[in-house]
Length: 305
Image (cartoon, rainbow, N blue to C red; front, side, top):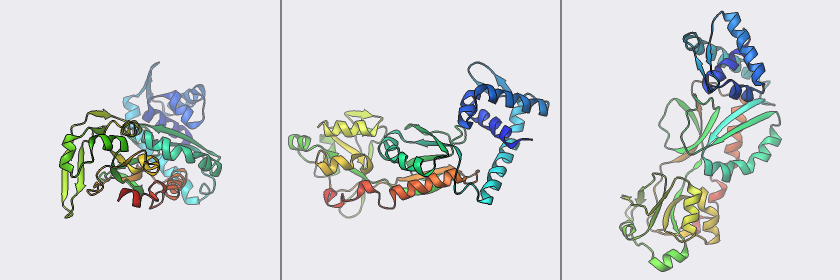
C-alpha cells in the first residue's frame, strides 16, 4: 500500500475537501480523486462520501483513518531518522498564527526563510481564532497563551510583555491615572475579551481590576491605532506597540504599577506526531528570529520605567 496514497486520504479526512488536500500536496483535484479511487478499489471499501460541497468519512473510512495515520507518521519518522531531509526539507508546511502578530513579525521575515528553504511551500493561515491543529491538518501553530494542554509539544519563542499605554494628548486632556483604581474614571480600550487587568502593586501584591471598556475591538493593531488617536488607555503587548512607544506616539499610562502577564509566545505541534524536519527548521527559525529578548523589546526599558 502506497504511503503517499494514505497521506492523501489522511489529509482529505482532516480537511474535508479533496481539492484542498490536493493543493496541500501539490496535486491536481482530478489526480487526487483518481489516486483516492484507486486506493478504495485496492481496499474494496468506500472510504469517503463525496458531495459538491464537502467530503466526509464513511463508516469504513472512520475505522481505517487511525491506521492510515499511524502508517503515515511511522513513515515520516523513518525518513527523519535517516537524516536525509534535514538538509533540504520539502513539501508543504501548514502554519497557524495570530493575525496581528503574523503580519508584524512573521511575514516580514519570510523572504529570508524562503531563501533558506526553497523546496518548502508555506501555507500560512492567520487568524485570532484558536484553530484545532489536528482537525485543520496544521503542522505547527504560533500562539500567545498560558501553556496548559499536555496534548501539545511546545517550544518557547519569546515573552509576551504587556503595558498600559495612551497618547500624550489623551493624558494631557484627561490626566494620568495614579493607581489602578483611577482607571474607573478613564476611557479604556480593550482587545477582544481582555478586560481583566492585573498589576503588581508597590509592595509586590497582585491587584486585579476589571475595566468597563468604552471601545472593544477584536484586533490588537486596531486598538493600538485607536489609542494613538487619543481615544483612551489600552493594554497592549509590547510586540504590537513598541514602535509607537519609541516614537512617543504612545507613552506608558501607569508605569508605577507594571502589568503582570502570564502569557508567553509558543510554537506548538501535536504531541502525537514526530517532529518532521520541515517543522523543526521553521521553529528553529522563529527561535533565532525572536530570541529570549525579542527585538521589539530592546531599548524599551527606560521608556517603560
